[in-house]
Each structure stands twice: as C-alpha cells, then as structure tokens.
Length: 301
Image (cartoon, rainbow, N blue to C red; front, side, top):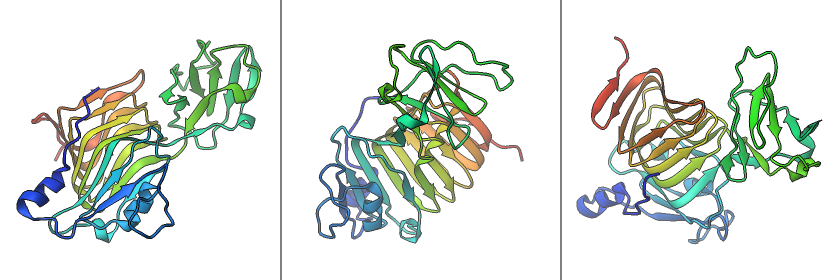
C-alpha cells in the first residue's frame, strides 16, 4: 500500500505561484461535528453538502475521525465545468468514503449448520463486507449445478442469491452476523466537468465503481487515493474523459481494478493495480491507457 503523502493540493500550488485560482475558498466537512443545515462559516456534515456550498475553484477538506463518510458523491454541473483556469479540489486527509450498509437481520435465512443466505434486490456486482473488509469469496461459475462447500467465513454468489458460511457455527441468530453489503452504486461520479483533483482519500465497498468518470471530464487527477473492494471496478473511465492517477492503489475490486471504455483516456504513474481472487487488473472496452509513460492500449481506428 503506498505511503500517504499530505501536501498542498496541486491546484493550490498553482494559485500560490501563478495566481490562477481567483476567489478560491476552503470548505470544511466533518461527519462527526459538522451540520448541513447551518449556513454560517463552520463545517458541514456531508461531502455532498460541501459540494452545494463550494464554487468551481474551491478546496473541500474532509475531517478524518476514523468514521467513514457513508455517502455517494456527485461532481457535475455548470459551476464545476471550469472552462478557464482553476478547478475543484477534494482533500480527504486520510478519510474513507464507504457504500456499505449493515444487512438487516430479517433479511437472512438459515439453511442450517451455520450456512445462511440472502436475496439481494439488485442482482450482480455483489460485495459482502465483514466489519470494514471484504469477506473472502468463493467464485462459482454461472453454469454450476450446485453450490460448492464454503469454508467458515466465506461467501459465494450463485443464481442471484448470496450464501455465507458463518465463521462460528454456534451463531444461531442473524443479528450475530457482523456483515454488510455494498449497497450504494458509485462512490464518486464525475460528469461534464474540468480540472478536478481528488487526493488522500479511500473509496471502498460500492456496488459498482469506487470512482466513475462518466463522460466529458478532462483534467481529472486522482492523487494518493485507495480504490478498494468495490463490486465492479476501482476506477471506470468512460465516454470522452481524461484521468491522471498518481501514487495510488486500486486493489481487490471484483471485476477489474481499472475499467476503460469508449474514448476514455487514463494515465497512471506510480500506481498499483492489485487484483483480488476474481478481478482483472484492467478491463478494456475501448479507450487509451498509459502506464508510467508507456502506451499499453489504444482503440482500433
């Protein structure tokens, strides 16, 4: 895991030395002490509330109390388009954004001998979470005729059902299962904006992607981020988007660490792609990729 580096955001350095970020301001988020309904100058509680308050050149700072921010973040809209100079920066200062929710006890059905099952309403791209880590998964082929035997503490998805073998077979009630499900779709969605920097942040346990740069986003920089254990990919770059990833780690995502599609362009430097038991390092569906300056893929013309 790359060492965390806490330095001035890239856009702030530009402001200091070139004067390019006129009227930039700091917006503070604190999910323990902040208040979204307060209109004064103190911190807000949620990142999305900070985005409503922030302008296109501002810096959003997240307080890290060791408690994840359980929310999805949407960065889009005219004020973040930034046709000129400057851009939005989100500095996580080591915080975590998570999409996991505790599974209600009445959702579990016991099959005996410590084996439990749930039927998620939304199919595919599952991720079962034990406290703050993805539970180990047994991969089952779609054509399998029966569920394989699961080791204690392991889970499997088969025919739209999630099965979990309790680590302790003495557990007889579902509220004894310390499990959550990656429920929210995407951690950070970026669409139709320019010059966005996200740094010093972990994004984990979302049903689809940790960060999804959907379309028409340029100058997006992810620096010192951890995109881990999401149900599809850590980072998806799609449409006509351009993303630079620096000093980061994409690890343990179920389908791919990096999902590249359409005309998306990604440039990675000093970045680790660490697949889990099932996920590939990269899933290509088009686009162009540079890793440490070496071109690895470009779409056919």
